[in-house]
Image 1 (cartoon, rainbow, N blue to C red):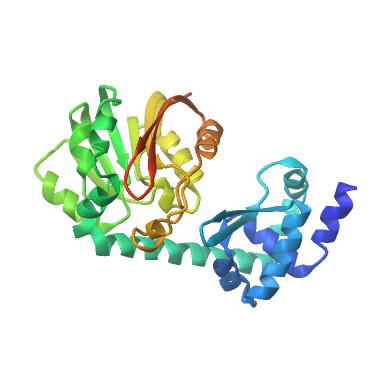
Image 2 (tube, one colour; image 1 turned 135 degrees about the vertical axis):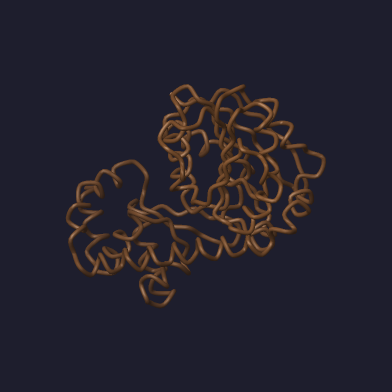
Amino acid sequence: MEIIKYCKALADETRARLVNVLLEYELNVGEIVQVMEMGQSRISRHLKILADSGLVNFRREGLWAFYRVSDDGPGRDFLDGITKLLEDEEELKRDRNRADKVIRERTAATRQFFDDIAPEWDRMTAEVLGDLDLGEEIRKRLPQCECAADIGCGPGDMLEILARSSNMVIGVDNSPKMLELAEERFSEDANMSLRIGETTHLPLRDLEADCTVMSLVLHHLARPIDAIREAGRVLRTGGRLLVAEFDQHDNEIMRSEYGDRRLGIPQEKMHNWLGQTGFAVLATKEFKVNKGLVVVMYEAEKL
């Protein structure tokens, strides 16, 4: 019986604590060890039991494995039924707080990385994209509109392109150095608004934008679906979302030298995320670039 399998999997304090954390966060083994303050071999043993039971899923990307509770199926139904029991336990609250701290430290490290490489960003991007003029491909798909937003705008390369089809352009990034470079380019433009903020907590009002762009941003995030959902919040109904993203790959250099959190995103996964967050995918197109990578352009409309 399924319920017996699930109950046996959770009949251990450590595994109950793991599920409690993985209900909210997707973490790699090193991060889980940090949160739980236990040895890696012990953590790995408990994760295997949870994965074998169907309560926890893991995805392997190159040399790393990431864990999170199951997104669907009977295992997820079981977890949804017991979640309320986990909320008020003090020890479980402490685990969630430690996990939140790990996520915040990871975000700060990513922000520092982009601050450090900001002056080299154009060169690094060119090394990867080669002959692909990604800005031009995005321009061809942009609608004429009142307000467009570039989420994860970096030094502002895409902002100038958005300005050709929009009366007001908003650029958002979490790196102060990147925004400083963008400010140098557009300081005299009254129709350009540069705002510091996270992709998962955008400094925009509900329904403020007619069009939003996320260009090679999502693979840096722990929870890309949260950023897509947030893009939907700030986008009016019927508005356009353009996402340029690497297809799934196994080039570890992108993680070690370019600060990527994920080795691309499978197209099926991207379609699922867009559908779950209220978008209809209108078209996709693939572009082969350097380092054995493929960039996929997704055009979507908010329903």
